[in-house]
Length: 610
Image 1 (spheres, rainbow, N blue to C red):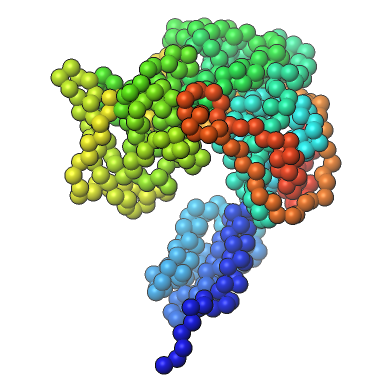
Image 2: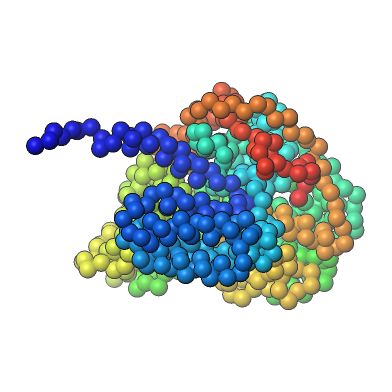
């Protein structure tokens, strides 16, 4: 009998592991703007390299497909080649024995549908579509298109106020995004080719810590135009639009239904994540531009609509999505069942309910659900349980928020769908009854839950917080929207059926992120300025430092830490710890300045607003 070894089956397999990790990092760092046909060809060739060679469709079909796809990529394919690709890909998908073959064929078939315009352009027009051009990943993936490499360089040189000014070129809320932005700019950071994405949000946080927003002067306002614009909603989108319009010389009146400005960043994000005094710094800086009149506690009715439109040269509606979605459950109207939005809104007005000794169940798996869980802990709840019908990995909340909640004692009860609310004789909530689920087939891009053949589960709960999404409260104003549906607008944010009304932010897209709302406000300001017959150019007065030679030494990424859970869960003070000077310099030094090195170089206009 031959000898056996406990060593790996192949020394080559062990050696190749590092290269496979590099392959993964390269895929994750694929820059935006890539030609879809080229990306598909790369994926197909990877499948060809993995084939074992046993079945003909996979062994011979993938290389043949790659040759045809290369003709399309090179803009040398005749129209009938697309039919050949579709037929051959179907054969590879349906005739291969294993996933390597059938998934390779299936990916091509899906790509032919998803990127139909791109394929048609390659074959008929012999070129890529106009939007295909490799871009600076961080700048491109930021909805506000902030000059990330520029302000990172300024922070690296200790020029913090100038960094804040450069951020404001495209985003007037540097503090807000330094604390609560979901940092899409980091997703395809090219630095992960070497180690890990640069902590862009952390660097921004360091900049505003060193140079508070309300101490950094804003640019001088351009000469008055005589135009008057109304902005409905003083959240991040509305105030962003007001900021840029005021800088352009237009007079702006902001109508806000609540007693304070900030929108859902004040009434939807707990103070431990975003201390109110830091929010007020950004708002104070925005208003320092001048020419912005804010009318608080002003809810607009249908009767107000015609008057506002008539009295203003343009109107921007940014009322957000400020009411919580309801669940259709027996007992949903019981005492103790509270909408997550209502709870957080109440706290936004500095009214803190007392949950001392109470058992709390939170329904949902998004960031708002995590905010409710962590808030309930701070309100004195004896137990907090997050009930979610999918798995933890399916939650839409940032994993850092999920992890922080668990550190603070929140129990995650997954694969449990709410069935009904159990009440006592006085209609008080006493328990949440759930139906166990199991994870099933993928639908609309996510694994869907299905009802499991298991008995119901009873979760004792004095309070049930419902955090399953938000709706638009269109009845609060007379602007163009159907009840609880997103406001309709064209690609330039012009409201459907109105000549001078624009809409943007959550009320137009549905609930989204702060940075997307800011990006919409910026776009609206530019388009309103154009609508009024202007083309103003705004200069932030800051020039980014010249790019230095890349430091390609691998480093560990500096992550922002939080105060110990045993301390932070007892109060609503900010949870994040400061980044040190040494950490900030190291992170800034990791930036590869893709705006200078690489084909995604920013063109002229870097230092202009909007």
